[in-house]
Structures are given as structure tokens and as C-alpha cells.
Image 1 (cartoon, rainbow, N blue to C red):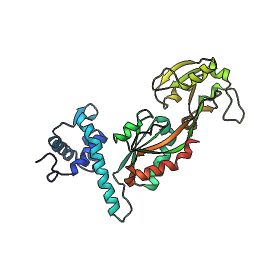
Image 2: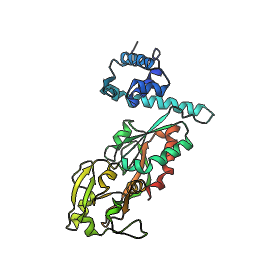
Image 3: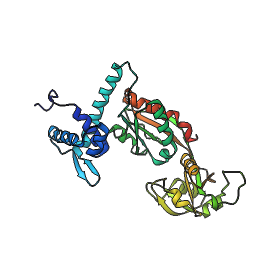
Image 4: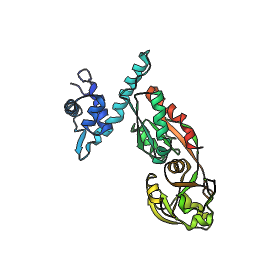
Length: 310
């Protein structure tokens, strides 16, 4: 068979390839596709012959894609999306999302604030559709979208690349998190004051991918001040465990501070330092909204923007 001749190719193999890539294992792909694991394994053997590559190699936690599989994934997913779009156009019935998944790229501060509302909105407007949250941030988000690793993304900018579209969800700013017990009684004011002197005197927990210097250090340096960072972490979810029972403070995006404070004994307090705001944007590939599933999730995210508190 000629390399570009698809007349003898079972195109269902492409759907199995996509499931293997996204689920990372034959057993999970089988559950997603409502197939037996042996049938998925047999399909993988045929895929390996078809593409003359192993495609996926066993690891301790499932299957890892080869470089060839990573090269194929955006091409295969785009082909499948076009088929889905054609069926949506041809069918007069409401779209069925059973078995569909849409991947949303976002950092964990946005996931803390918007994850639950997005799930609720999607369940209401696209029943049967599953959302997948994947970590990304503004420096890499355009590549993640272009490579079809994600379908939509929420980030502080980064959508200027050709072929991407975006919309504003609001303007972000910062607030502080502390253990409520470390504050002097503040009456009925849940947003108790923290003076700049007290702010600088506390130990600081820095959330940063680099773990060395943050926006707070830059603002303090402009005033001839310096803080003491006692620990750094790359994710927001650990803050309740790092702050509880201590005198430490963390300065983080307000939407994340509000979400964490609502579920823990931590207190959100206003930052006594003037810090610049930043844009919060939703981005996607320019042609992605042809897929009704992606369009529905885009609209669901837009309906959740008020949870950002902007």
C-alpha cells in the first residue's frame, strides 16, 4: 500500500491512537472507548505497523508516547476534529458529547478559582462532556495550543502568536494569605489590615516557578526594603499546609487567595504594597471553535469569569 493511500486503513485506529495518547495507557483508553483492553492492544499493534514506529513505550505508570507519536498527535486530532465538525453540521439533532473531552490549559491558581464553576457550567450546557485540566502558563501557552496539547487556555497573556484568538476575562491583582490566628483581633472585618512594617517583618512563602525572586521583591526594592523568603513552592495548593500555625505570609493572585481562604482557616488580607495588575485572558486556536464541544466549553468559561473577582 502506498504511504499516502488510506483506502485500506481502518480510520477507527486514529480514534484509538488519540485515546492512547491522552489517557496514557491501554486499560484507560479501553474504558474511555468502551472497548476491551485486548482490542485496544491489538489496535496498537496495527498502529505500530501503519506508522512504522513503536508509538508508545511501557513505563511504570502506563504508556509514554515516542517522539513520532508526539509529532503525529496534532495531525491526528485535527483530522478527528474535522470529522466531528462535519457530523455536527450534518446532524439536525442537538450535539451529543458523550465520550468527548476538551483540554483546558491553566495554572493551578486559576484551577482553584475556576475549576469547580467550569465543571458545573459544562455539566449544565454540554452534558456528557469531560473537561481535562492541564498545567500551563503564559510563557508556553501559545506552543501548547499550537501543538494541540490543549484546546483552550486561561493565562495572563501569551496569546499573541499567529493563528490564536483570545478574549479578556478580567484584570488580576494580588492579596495576602495568613493564618487568621496570627492577626490581632479585627472585629467584623474579614480583610484585616496588615501594615507594611508588619508585612516585611513576617517570613514569606514565595510561589514561583523559579523560586528566587518575585514581583513583591521588586516592589519592595523600589522602596529600599527587603523581605525574608523562608520557603518557595511551585504550586498554590500547598499553601494551607505551609502557612497554617505560622506567622508567615504569602502574596498571591487575589482569585487564588479567595478560593483558598474560603476552604481553610487562612485569612485573606489586603497587600500593603502597591503591585501592578495583569490581564486574565482566555485563548484558543482560531479554527478550534468549529468544534461545537470546544465552543461550548469556551462559553462556559466566559460565564465563570465573575469567580475571578475582577
